[in-house]
Image: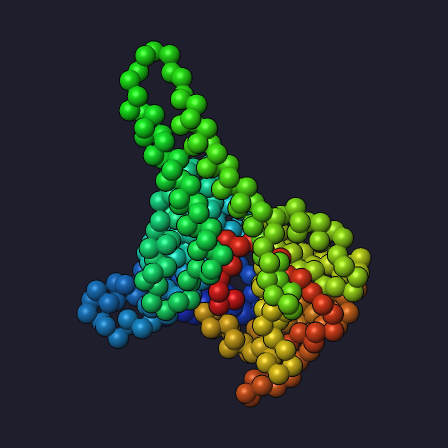
Length: 339
């Protein structure tokens, strides 16, 4: 669909249609929504340049929605139920264009660059992330304590490696290049030590008692051999899966994020309404339909009832009934503090 020649009002109508379509079909269209918000931002920018300052608040609101979509769902643009690192990188770079001071977007780019051994890029993005963390005014995308540790350690390791390379490059050329053993071994040791640390602390493993960090192998072992009568929700590198007493189900990104929120943030005394998700506006009907689909999927896969509904502050609300212990496992670099 061509969006470039549409007016702001037409784009707003398309957003309404897209929301209704997603609610009816039960399938999000992340690519269309991101492209729509990009065009809305462009239109609002043009209006403001024409001295129509009344649109400034609208611009900021649409930008917030766009940045959220780029960061949270950018890796799902090709396949709704599977991540794609290359799409994630593109969308995170876009997020930094719209919000240059965003800490978490730069942090994730640092990790993805490190994953693909682009160490110079990784160092740059981690430094940007740490600098942005200091000045993130609204705090929505601040780094948590584990992310700060990872960023500082990785930056230190990469600085040492970079300095070693620079010293090597200054050595006189003799035709046959031999790396000085002490320099080269020190460089490799710093990178390998840091990689081992990151691997050991790659995932958060959260339950009622608190949070621990662990390796991906430990998470896979927990998911494949869970404790008895225990719910295990696993945000793997490609898919989101839940297991309980021999039953398993694959969840969509929205379903996974909703269930994680219920498990970690809700209770009978503190149920979750649509307003609990402060970064995006959710219609009452859309919220209810999303929860109904999640509950139906779990029921169809043989899971016991775990999500209850109630009324809270004149809104329909839901909460995890805490009938069973649980573990939620997800990558440290993919956590956002407000989720």
